[in-house]
Image 1 (cartoon, rainbow, N blue to C red):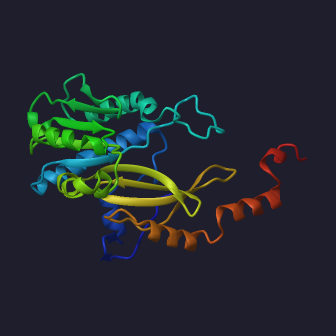
Image 2 (cartoon, helix red, strand yellow):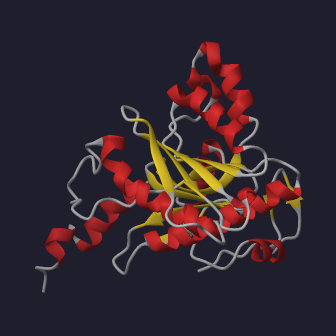
Image 3 (cartoon, rainbow, N blue to C red):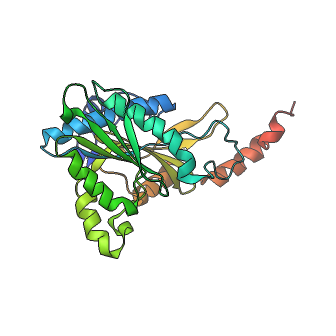
Length: 282
């Protein structure tokens, strides 16, 4: 169910107009239901972000945070679904990024070209060329980490101002991650120049399963609650232009879901019994 906000105002980057929200963001569930839907929504958002950069006269430089689907052999009891880390994830992500780049370029040359930038860091470079114009080419660096700062700079210069460069599932979050000597350099070369192109992120907040999505230009947030009839999406913060802060998410979750997850589960078990017992009850 779509979360409609009816008040018309705009404060601190939060959009309160249902009209504006519906125009900027197509009507979808808050989070992608399938990997295919995530890919299609990523393509659409990246295209919109590229167009916005060009309208502002900026080189298209984007972050993409894509939630790589778990392997088919993953079991519910697995503590770590990716025991091999990025090396195990790379082949899956390689196919995903190739599909996304091909979808972003309207007239792609087949196939998408790629090369490994760093085998130990599982970092790769991908280019999807356009048949009609070099400025429509889109390049991406997969799993760039702090040790790839120089390579990012070199590729940025090679790509030029007109073509798009994407940092796909970057392995750093703040300028300080580059170390004391490279903090300012990382800020100048990356954080001051790149903007979000698409995001589907998940993490725990107050013990709840929180999802964040960015589809240009809007951030959305919701909590997923397990129910017998299926998972339920509970919107948390209103649509906004800036990534929601953890403190604001936690505060709103306390309002929307006053009882912690463990307390709700205990209440459910007391009322209905444990899940493994319910099928045996008459």
